[in-house]
Image (cartoon, rainbow, N blue to C red; front, top):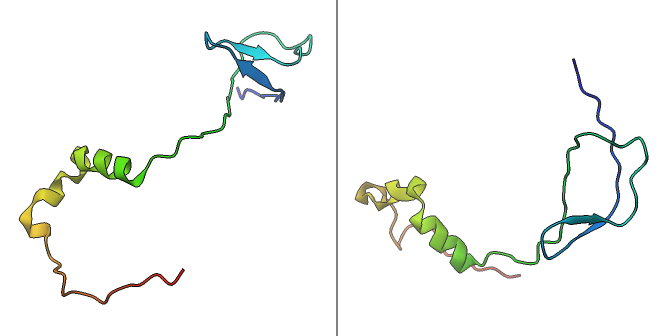
Length: 84
């Protein structure tokens, strides 16, 4: 049996104890279990340095430690100069 979901959009505040405080009351027929999606501004962007540090410790990239992966030299290719 397929569950039909209705959506109610409202705004809310997350307090210091991480409780969700709705700005408006819910409709009277809104009761029972619900799914909640919380959207908030992400003011923190990961820097390139942090990204590279995390990548260098990730075991998914450990194959790059193998010398057989060093197939290019500084003499390969053409220089790229960004004109932006």
